[in-house]
Image (tube, rainbow, N blue to C red; front, side, top):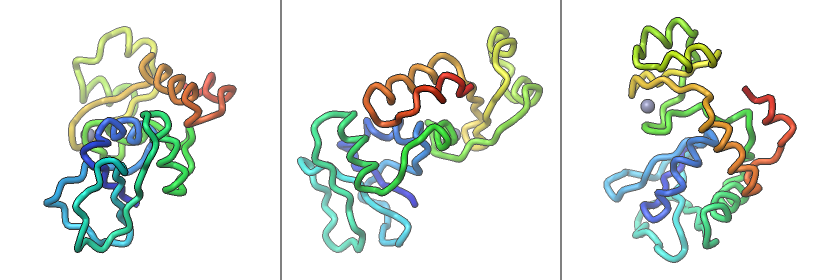
Length: 160
Ligand SMILES: [Zn+2]
């Protein structure tokens, strides 16, 4: 299922990709109407969807964290650690797990301390970017737990 996110909700795109949701920013040139797609809009800025045969998901809460929780309630998706960090934050492509050696070859700019401390790397075939589970990943997990979007603190301690 792919979700087209209204421009006024663009600040949710990165978080939803972190959470493994297939999301793209909507613009009016996008041709919609496929069953496996939905538009996500904010009630205060409704999109001009007349004539487009698609059921919009309309969020109505005021804050980033409430909107994320509301998205999962209304979409029926279940957020969780298992789905997280599987998509490129830049382009939405599914990431490909690669070996330590591959990461080094594909991205010569990876700092030495990262190579020494990280075991798992993911690769975006489209952006040619390598991802690893640094402190930013742990910070994002903590933030999402703090907001109550995901919950499983015991497991997240051992996530990487
Ligand atoms: Zn990418």
